[in-house]
Image (cartoon, rainbow over all chains, first blue to last red; front, side, top):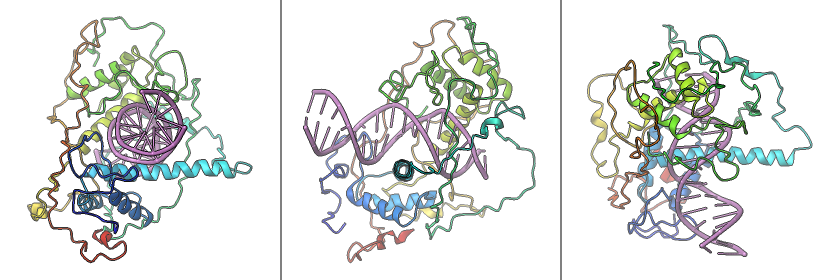
Length: 189
Length: 189
DNA sequence: CTCGTATGAATGAATG
DNA sequence: CATTCATTCATACGAG
């Protein structure tokens, strides 16, 4: 930012963060953040912000609009992507560094898929809309502190080892063997 | 639906994006709907179907399996996602950089509880979709040709004009004049 | 111009 | 139904 942030037009055009969005209507296929915008976003991210709330997104977007055209969704996507890729990269790194030992995804093959069947829907989908009186305390975000401290890695890792052979317990009852007639109409509903 | 039908013909035709899992049991990534499937689903959605029942899901899935591999859960998720994103994108909110010098926070109109914001995503207003109820006996397919019906949704068209008329007002409370070295601009959070 | 990489955008799949 | 994660698609840029 210190490096010559002009009012709104000029924007350093070095690197990929050229600021052609802010001036001289170039094409606008997709948002191209300016270096200042990236800096602010990165600072926020480094400060711990990972999943900004809507309010935060709006505020960030408003502030960043000073540096150039930006929309809320850009901020939203930026954080999504940044977080995702951080994680992705970390996974690869750990996979690369510690391959001799456990990679933290030592998948215990405990058939995690068995949740897919039979209760109410074809697959899980706990759709319990019945009146539960469980009052969820609507917890709004602090709005002032974004240090969510979510450095926790969720070790979820649902095995995506999806082969084409019976990964899902429930079998499609639709006999694909015989292709439906051509005159199909969705009058089946 | 959204402008993102960026895949009416090139669904993963380059390398790793194996794309078509429609036939010939190839890799089993995630479901990659074909254009026809998307069209049918979209039609159903536009016709008012929002939360298909188990039975309907089953039938839809059966019908759509003609166009390619599909499972019931795909249909279910499709509707869930479509509905959710429809809503979320309908939240563009009057948040606009043009005139937010106005106290836009007076919209907390009545003494209703402030349920606004706080956890909602928005951005990207698209078309308008009135809310209808489920229409029974939908007749969708034109009996034989299912890929010539519409071509009008293919437009990418990010309705955002690429103007730089941000005309950023003066509500930038961050001290740009005597900006501290860092992070003070983030104080708005 | 082509290709590789970084990243914006979209969406399938879950989870709570 | 709201929110998040993971994966993929699409595009901008720089290198060669």
